[in-house]
Amino acid sequence: MAALKTVRGWNPGQVIPLTRPSVILGRHPDCDIVLDLGPVSRQHARVLQIGQQYYIEDLHSRNGTFVNDERLEGRRRLAENDQIRICDIVFSFHHEAPVAGRTGETEASDSVVVVDDAALGRSSTVVSKLEVLSSSTGAHVRVGAEVKLRALVDIGRHLARAVRLDEVLPMILDNLFTIFIQADRGFVLLKDKNTGRLVPKAVKSRRPDDSDEIRISRTILNDVVQRKEAILSADAASDSRFRLSDSIVDFQIHSMMCAPLLDSQQEVLGLIQIHTLDQKRRFNEDDLELLVSVAGQAALAVENAQLHEQRLQEELTQRELRLAHTVQQGLLPATPPQLPGYEMSDFYEPARELGGDYFDYIPLSNDRLALALGDVSGKGIAAALLMARLSAEVRYALASHPSPAEAMAHLNRTFCQGRWEGRFVTLVVAVLDPARHEFCIVNAGHLSPLVCRNSGTVESIPREASGLPLGIEEDSRYPEYLLSLQPGEILTLHTDGIPDAVNPQGEFYGLDRLEQFLRQVARRGQTPGLSRFDLARQVLQDVRNFIGEQSPMDDMCLTSIRRVG
Image (tube, rainbow, N blue to C red; front, top):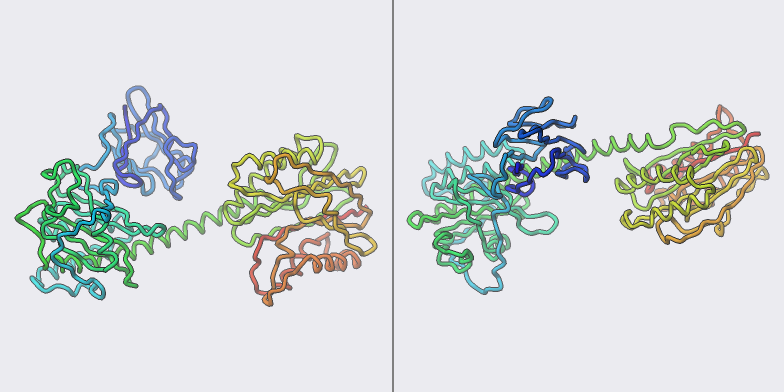
């Protein structure tokens, strides 16, 4: 059976059998091979079996698919050992599934096992230690200074050109194997920012046929990290920590050096370890000093590469957020609908690039019109995705159920199905029957709608006419509240970002201030100079005047409808 083998990326050496005639690779969870990486397209590429041959084609991805470093155009037949690159992930193609693991001098973080041996109470055969603090500039070169200095300069020049970790780490090991010709194996471990544990990131073996699993002592690693000292073990084969394989003959490590990688703040980024199997060519203290010097340059390169990758990821995130913002805005009404006898006004302003507030105008049967406004718990991408789903669900529920109350109950059951990560939604729907000038209002835990009467008063829909937010209790019921508007009267729906807006003095805009502003508008009618009903924008401007230069803490959304005839 044909297969893809991971060369670079997650789990190097992993073999993925091609069990179907068509295998799609991409970021979407429904893909056959999921590549959970931002630059990868949702459906990036496809491997096809036609007869006895296999082909690959790009599915109009954003960043392209490459075969043997050539950008793929159209469909291409795959040959044995063809290299398929999708962004930073590389696979090799094989007509027969190969044995998973490392081949030759490749990176293979899964070929290193960190052994927790502290409980054994055994000591390491350490014959020399060297403090690394303040020595990361490469000044610790005493023996053979001319030759070693030239080697360090070459290493520094090579590392200075590398800006990606997947370039830096193999380059570090390549240079060490050039300097230490007795080295048989080496690896680089970096500290995981979330867990603080040392994770193998790059491995090198001088022998192409070396397939032994490398086992290393966590006690030794912790000692190097905590003391920030490099260590030299003159005869690791006699150290009981390394007697972990079935045959010590096949696993003889006769000498080992380990040095920490310290960043510009003298904090540990990770460490480098190399060892030799040749008992006649052991490392000495001069080698340890040179390793410390190399580790200083390597740490700087690693730190720069991490900062570079962080910057690239931030830029990618910002681009994706801007795109998502554009998509989200496209889900909201561009302009209020035209309805004889009524005028509408709205605004939506997210606190971040993406928001969790929602509003919509939904045409229904018998010339009815539904105004919907809601607020998804939380902020950011997750809330925005849920808002997009809410938009589709609300339209479906109102169109498929005879009454707003039944539609709201359907929405609540949908959000109680446990696939929304414990989030809930507050939502209010007002369905207008223009023939009767009557609204049927259903409220699921949202702020009460406000009614501006011709008398200059502002009424709040009773809280008793509201049910629980969507997603709390599956059997919740939602009462219907009937409301009539006279010519000139206004119904307003809003989210809590308006009353919760805060000025520099720490004062809230508040519901009282909002109701007072609505009363002033109701008394004076349409603002002079405005060609259309624009209450929403007037409210937004009043909130902005109140908070000054403060950034809004929450999304703000408001929609109003006024009867004019």
